[in-house]
Amino acid sequence: MDDELTKTAVLPHLSTRWLGQNYHFYDTITSTNDILKEWVNQGDASQPPAGTVLVADYQSAGRGRMSRRWEAERGTSLMFSLLLRPNWPAQQLTWLTMIASLAVVEAAEHLVSVPLGVKWPNDVMLSLDGSWRKWGGLLLEGSVGEDGRLQTAILGIGLNVNMTAVQLPEGLTPVSSLSLAAGHRLSRRRLLVDILASLERHYEAAAAGDSPQTRWRERLITLGQAVTVHQAGQAALQGQAVDVDAWGQLLVQTRDGRMHTIAAGDVSLRG
Image (tube, rainbow, N blue to C red):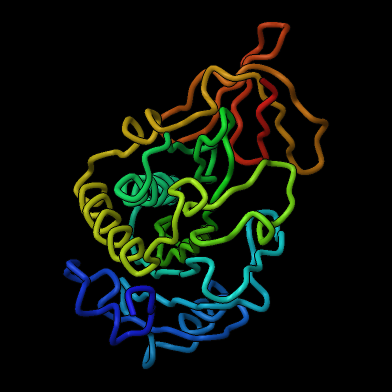
């Protein structure tokens, strides 16, 4: 079946050299990020290699950003985590968010004809009926060694692929699914295979020193928009999203003319 995500169904279709070649599939799991993190912490003898991918059809304790719950019915979504060992300066952790969102958008463009984009910092969006709607998101967790370099990075990706309108979760950001944009069910396997191929290509370019910032910036739907920024322990900030810096931090100009650099937070579009 074209939608199967088992190891025997996926591996013959992978075009990657290392990303996803160590592949694990679970019908049910708590959280792909949490389980992969447990594997990493088991000890040197059983360390999973870079490029390990863990896919689940159902997560009982899936998480999004800000510890929000992420849950979807079986057969409707693409939920997976992958392990990277960049050995990059810690500041380059944000590059992984950039290349992952680029990979997701590039892979999905082959399946739908509607505009696709990224809402800062890590929501993937599609334009339907004249408005931007979220159809997926990323969760990145990294560990830094005493030398200030990234030792491991676990990247979780959750995508609404074949959700119907009644299955969509409620949220502050309008939501949709890729199949609603396409008008028919889609192959989760094809989407996964294409994402991994694109991600491996972007990762290797970044490892060679090629920043993904310019390409990622071109995909951002946030720039030029009136936004409200929510940061933990701080009052909400309203202004215009002007740009992003080399490390992906959002530059927001408030009405008084001051420029604010936002490293992390929730951003909602106000216009």
